[in-house]
Every structure is written in structure tokens, then in C-alpha cells.
Length: 375
Ligand code: ATP
Image (cartoon, rainbow, N blue to C red; front, side, top):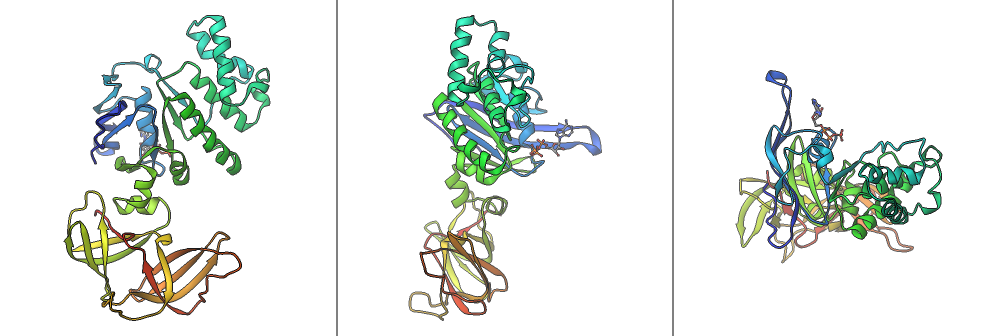
């Protein structure tokens, strides 16, 4: 898909029509296949996708460690194809953050500024500011082989931010941290980004991480960008099956398209039940239509047949499984259509969800919650 037009915000990095081929002939591999993204200034932008989809390759190209086979990369409107990495106002934080173990925290953060030949007083002030930003002032004189993983990641961030790059690239920087620390650092990273106003381009395969931190996300698969949008767009209006499936839990329903009126589709399920659904971005009508419904957008109700407002009847089936998760309960219903549908219901205090395995139930989908996917 083409990147969304952004008339009044400035674009920091624009990748257009990027192709990256590794190798030649029959063994050639297209790691990136016509990728276009426009990342705005001061944006927290995430490249999200499974292992091998090409996100690191794209990041390395923006950094200048790798050159595109085709396509252009612009930084604030200027083509940077010919610039070597060290001449780009871009820094990278890697997963293995590679600090100098024999140097102190302070010396690690000062290193890049010293290489740039900045005056001593300026370096001292800047290092102090960066250590404050990452909450590491107290450990300034500690050697970096004597600090924890989470502290090391903070120092790596301070070091990368110290020369005030225009863009910071982050390649899975949190994946080596344990769960609790990772959660903390997600919030911290977002804070550092908004405090510094630097454009962050973040790579991850973790959908939850992408949803919690990003202003916008590009979902990638097999060298292509499938959808670009806010976390809300991506979660609530997935354009394709892969996006819906990769992010969060989803129900898919195979239906037949009866017609489209005023942007709303009318579809029929194999059991004859008819319902309305919104259309995914870029949807092109065809006979068969896959519906997507998030589990929290449906409710289990007592079984019932056709009613005045639902003459074709409602989705119905038999409860297969009830799984309690503390905050919510997952109810798996074997539909008469022949597949399982999952409903997520919020738990209320001292009251169970009220359904039992083996019971016949109906399912009500919230208005506007069903969407027809692009093929
Ligand atoms: P991961 O999360 O595992 O790092 P990724 O999405 O970042 O995955 P890339 O590292 O960009 O994926 O790799 C994309 C594809 O390109 C993979 O199939 C990979 O094997 C291939 N690839 C990457 N670098 C090279 C290279 N230098 N030579 C040949 N193939 C490469």
C-alpha cells in the first residue's frame, strides 16, 4: 500500500520503492519487495513483523550499512543513498548493545562526543543531561561490566542519543531483557522519545510492544509492508488476514457477499445467518468474503432463534470451553457453521461468566465490530 498522504507534518525518513535482493540467479532472495514508508518527524514508528520479514534489512538500509537494489531513501527530503553511515545524522541501538566494558558509564556516553571533537565543557554538560534522561546519574562512575542488563540498555540509549541524532534506529533493543524489565523499559523508551523529540524507528516482532509504544506501525510480511497505521487502526481495522492474525486474537468467518450499500457489506454465513459488516481499507468486492471479529467485540447470550430485528437468526453454537483469566474469561463456542468462535468477556466481581460447557448459546456481535477483509 502507498504511505498515507501527510500534508502538514514533515517527513523525517522516506523510503520509496525499496527492493533488496541478496544473491543472484535461481538462489536470489528478495528480502524487500517494493517497500514504501514515510516516517514523520518526532514520530515513534515501529516496523513489526515475524522473523525474516525484512525489518532489520530495512533498518540497516536507513542506517547506511546496506544499500538498496532499487528505490530511494530520503532524509528530510534529501537523497542519502551516497552517504556512508557515519555521515548520516542517524544512530543505531542494537539488541546486543555493545558497550565498552573497560570504560565507565560516563566514558561510554561521552565516547561519541569525544570522537566528534566537541569541547570538554560541552561534553560534560551533555553527558550529565543524557544520564539524567535515562536515570543513570548515580552509576556514572561504575564500569559497564559491573551493571545489569537493563542498566546497560539505558547506557546504550544515552550513548546513542548524546550526539543528538535526527533519527534513532532501535533493533529489538529490549528483547534480551526479562519480562518485567522489558515492560518498564517500554514506558521509559516512549518517555525518552517524547522528551527528546527525536524520531525513533523501532524494530520488533512483539505485537504487544508495538501496540503500547508506537505512534504508527508498519506491519511487514515476506519483504512487503501490508499495512501502515496507528496501533488502533492496525488492531481495530486490520486490512488483511495476516495483519488480523499476527496482532491480537481474532475470529475469522467465511461468508458470501450479498451486496454493499453505503460502504456497509451484507454477508451470509453458511448456516443462512445474515449480518452487516464494515469494509477493510482497500477492499475490492468479490463473491467470497472473510469476516474478522475481535473476541472482545462479541457477547454470549441465551440461545434463541430468529427475531423481528434478526429474521435470519443469530450466530449460535455449543460452548466448548470456558477459560478463566482473572480480568476476563475466554469462552470458546463451536458454531453451527462448523468452526470455533472465541468470545472474551470482562469479569465482574463475585460473578462468574454464567455459561457452562455443553450449553447451547447465541453470539451477538457489537454493531460495526465485524469487518470484511481485503483478500
Ligand atoms: P529477524 O527478526 O529474525 O531479525 P528480520 O525481519 O529482521 O528478521 P531480516 O534480517 O531483514 O529479517 O532478513 C530478511 C531476509 O533476508 C531473511 O530471509 C534473511 O535470511 C535474508 N538476509 C538478510 N541479510 C542477508 C545477507 N547479508 N545475505 C543473504 N540473505 C540475507
